[in-house]
Length: 219
Length: 192
Image (cartoon, rainbow over all chains, first blue to last red; front, top):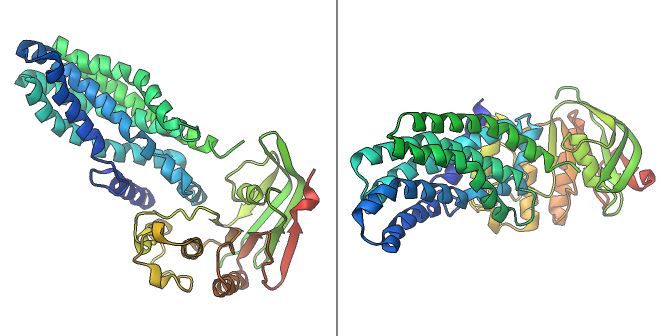
């Protein structure tokens, strides 16, 4: 158990904004750029922005989640960390689960904070902002789980990073439908379903990711 | 050191469509050292990974008693951290409270991030990580690559001490490894 906490601490030191694997602020800046560019593109129609703003924030969050994929698993696999963990009896599943947690902490809460200025840029009212924030809280763990899973699945492939981005989008569609859909229906059930999908993804990610990492060793 | 043992029975290894070796058996007890020799591409590294349990053999089985320490071309140390911090990570995982005795020449490198180290220095750092693990069974893949004469002598001495203390060392190397009572297994004999 203490070994896993050590691994989680290392993961956080790498992935948190300002962390040592670099590029950790990129998703946040990307997210804010989309929220900033959108009003320029569609014009200063406050009613239109307020109506579509919540959806834009969700799309921006999803796209921002794609950016760190190539840094999640590949460097540790290349440097032999997973082999050394396996020799010490630390399963790939446990390591992947720690990484989902670390990845979520490093991009979920920062994204929720960045959603505040984004909501101001898009002119969202308080009620919509509340639903967006709750939806992100329920949905970002799922996005983190998909991200780690996809990173593990594509790690052995050439041009895996580009493929990872493409693979992530369809898997994230259910989260987007219910998370952004909660804005139209006024919250409640949509957020609950987003949370349910997130839980399934978080439960699935360690097993899918662990098996994918083991598969890179064979054959 | 606890008694340790590793044995392989009738193993074969296939990489892609190619059979690398077959009908290989070995058995080592506490205190024994074995060199797997042969030129590049015979499957020395694959054999070590099979013995470590990281690669399933195409045929046959491996039994081991005791923890495995593996040294291969990946140091498994964080590139951007000063070496001392990178080693601390593994010390925390391996649960060793005592100071690790570093390889000679490593003390001076403790403040330098790994990415600035040369091939030989990285190998010394990786050896230091291996010592800290205190595993009874050592699997060393080309341990002497990139080391200078003094470091080679130190590395050989450390392996000798390890075996004298009851450990097992299996060394895959194409160059001679001058350790006492070394058995040699030419991998070419098992090529199909």
